[in-house]
Image (tube, rainbow, N blue to C red; front, side, top):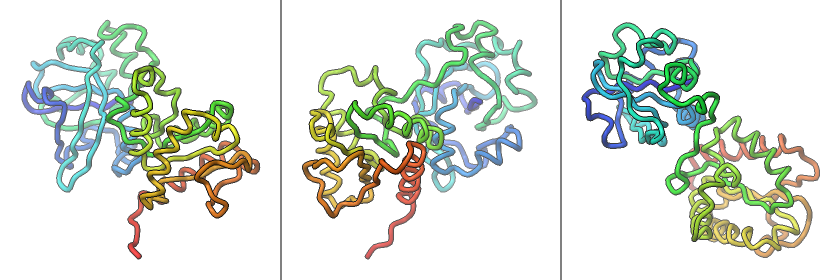
Length: 292
């Protein structure tokens, strides 16, 4: 699937942000997709961000660009989006799309009206068939956003010795929440290869809606886990208990974790079960909290 965005004015996409009237969302979209995507909840937003996007202008004269939506903010009367273009795909003209218009679902008066549609088609496969993107794009997974700009719904903190289990948890989480909603280090390997990684990691964990710490003897021993733990302790000291979830592989002492702190005992749960419990916490965190 892909997002098909039409905006007014040839310069509409020069500002990296655009607002659509809510009534224009999902115009020229099949009814089955409308039913799936109508409610702009967190899960739907992550799905939309995972789709490649065609950025076009009303009429057929403006440039057509390819990229991804990076942020979606529903407001009372409109929907604000922020986006990036794929710098490896040069802009092209609408006339270059003519051989595949029927295949990608562009028809009627759609190009004469500002709107946001979602189309059920493999965009990159179609564009590659007419030489608008390289063949290497066929079947490509969407790239992650810039980690500095992202606020994850879940961030996973764990020692490498437990990677197999945590990787399985991350896979389940991403199926439900979307790839860009979960911070699992190997999904961001290229972006983590930089100086001052300690500062970036602490900021990433501090901004996450929920940090899940997989505690064990190895967790206490690892320097990187210690850096992540600083951010977790900041949540706890700020009385943001809802933003932290403990899971244990064993009963080893971990500095700063006390006997009265609650946790999930992973000796009795599969990765799939652990993921379901994390999803439960994420969904509870999205509900308004009642003040005491």
